[in-house]
Amino acid sequence: MAPTAAVLINGSSDAITDFVLKQGNGVKGLSEMGLKDLPKQYIQPLEEIISDAKIMPQASIPIIDVSKLDGPTVAEAVCRAAERWGFFQIINHGVPIDVLENVKESTHRFFGLPAEEKRKYLKELSPSNNVRFGTSFSPEAEKALEWKDYLSLFYVSEDEASALWPSVCKDQVLDYMRRSEIVIRRLLDVLMKNLKVTEIDETKESLLMGSKRINLNYYPICPNPELTVGIGRHSDVSTLTVLLQDDVGGLYVRGDDDYWIHVPPVNGSLVINVGDALQIMSNGRYKSVEHCVMTDGSKNRISIPIFINPRPSNKISPFHEVLASGEKAAYKEVLYSDYVKHFFRKAHDGKKTIDFAKIRI
Image (cartoon, rainbow, N blue to C red):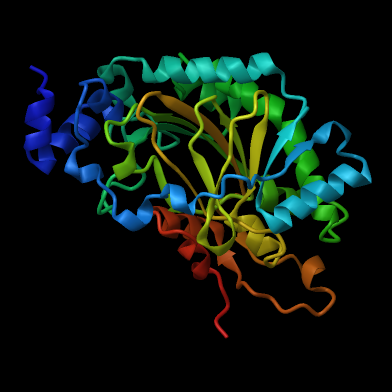
């Protein structure tokens, strides 16, 4: 017998954990019970909430038409955006609109599955460590949980994905990943040339894009959006992240003087952001910027980020081409898998992950 909303709200933390995590209901299950009040486990400290007074309404990250990315003007705009903002949106990127719509629809299909179906992909039950359904970010380490469910898919090969990824979304997700690879390579090529890295050889390709992960994120309607977050403040650990948004909105990027900038959905666009790995390899030239997601009180939201990463076995450090002019390294060499483990073993904490690689003076 399913528990009632009142039983969950007034019950123990174990009751919430069991319903959300172990039974596979996720926060979507809580939301669909018609809760009037947010369970206390999800109430965030005030400093984690972005108040209206901290939002810059007139500011925006660049929107760049990349149909002429080979030209100097567009290439310069991409590099300046990566240096100044760490975030930009791209349009006319070559990924067909129907591919974007299909992967969004398949995301809704997965989260629309019964809890017992999604539960098969929980950490303890999944057929592979590379396929995981979960909720929040790192529940074991968090003092307050985040209002988000996700399916995380680490790409190893087409064969493994076809065999192990959920059938309701795997074809659409794989198609989206294939179709987006061209623009990802073109962006990395432009960003590297600006660092005097003239050729992306096999070693550089492994460092820049040796592994890929895609997440399907679901942020259900929240009874008290002013009290919680969808994703807490953090920077990504990737080289680049390529994000597909729906039309709801909720992504915020840190701007100047502790103010925040909303990244509004632009139909057909992709949001690109620099990750910590690229900040390290560029010796800080490109900025991995803190960002977060706020929840919505009237609409469900989805987002689909592709994380382009080094291989776990790679050691990352500033490229020698960046340091060739005598510039001092700001970051030490770190094993990428160690860096990622450091990120996931703690709650979201802004930009603190990068300290793991910083050289102390």
